[in-house]
Length: 217
Image (cartoon, rainbow, N blue to C red; front, side, top):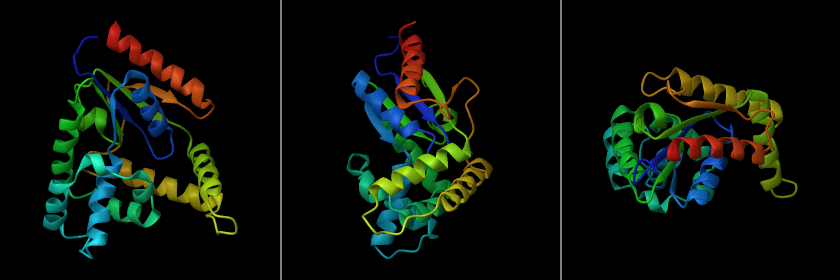
């Protein structure tokens, strides 16, 4: 291995499969894993819980500085209203600065780290040993998200339609790719993996092969 504490940077749009791949790669190598999107959701959740204004950047920075990356609960933070609030927090440059510093410290944890998000390979860890950009068609991503939500919904609960989820995903893509600060885009030296027609196993084996080649070549 080239580096004692290697970093695997994984970027991609919502529901592309990057989170699943990141978790599996982290388990495979015994590395730490961080879903960086949860850091923004964590700040948003704390603001909502404290009945604080979502457009107060100074207050959001104070919350971000105190955020414990080890206590981010995906089940709680995945709520739709937290995601909507996080989208407002994520455009604040000062907050992004605080969280990027924390994410970079996480990336240096031994024996290695896997980080997934929107700007890992381009901003957070531009010197990562291996960068992957995971994507899929908007329709395929909406289909996956709809299936996931339907499976988790309680019997009789109203579930968003495929069309509603597709519209939401396309809106998020436009927001993520169009923002002026750290837009979503592949790093120049990232390996592109389109999972539209891939099974989870095929996608994982494809990613694993690229990572092993980069870490041990």
